[in-house]
Image (cartoon, rainbow, N blue to C red; front, side):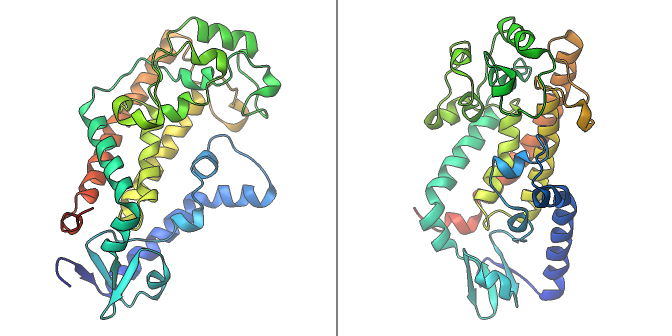
Length: 293
């Protein structure tokens, strides 16, 4: 098979098993909570919002340009083709189905990497999502607002809101929408996305799993781990009181809290940009260049 690295079972099976074991370890809490009907505002987000099941995340994909010998499970998964006992990404089928998404994500990642990161939002998107609401009407109703409704609203009104991420902005309450300095929209994401945004950092994971099996699972898992760390800071900086869950708040209404938030942002930005570069490399693989769409 031209241009395809072929892995024998003794080469790829241990990697697939290690991936599954890692995912099962990382998701055991989610699976146990779901069996009990319990919710968690931090750890459940990557599964509830992104709607990607642990069982699917546990599937190991070698990525474009790699073929597997004797891989009966992969043969049954969508997106693969088997030729002479070697199973690999069906590039033609994938491009036919997902070519437009590949183009969109390439453009989004490239523009995000080129744009200067912004570190002045201080996580106020979560505050804008509850602005003007009674505590019984907020998204995470099981956890109280740390400053109460009036105190939360006062923080929003004392700051300039500059949310650049459409999928955060679309959950703003109606009175908070007009307070945002930007108007991000679904079709203008490449014009607004910037790497300092915590939600843009979490979305790297989304683009990885949405473009499986083209994207190798080691990259998807790295993006999942980063997204999980980001979500923790995202909710620690949110208006909710999660101390009963062991999360100390990042008090973004104070100078010290703002500094703590920005320090975390800078770390996530550096790590996220490395993942963006790796994802771009996968989406610019030579095997894809040989196919036009």
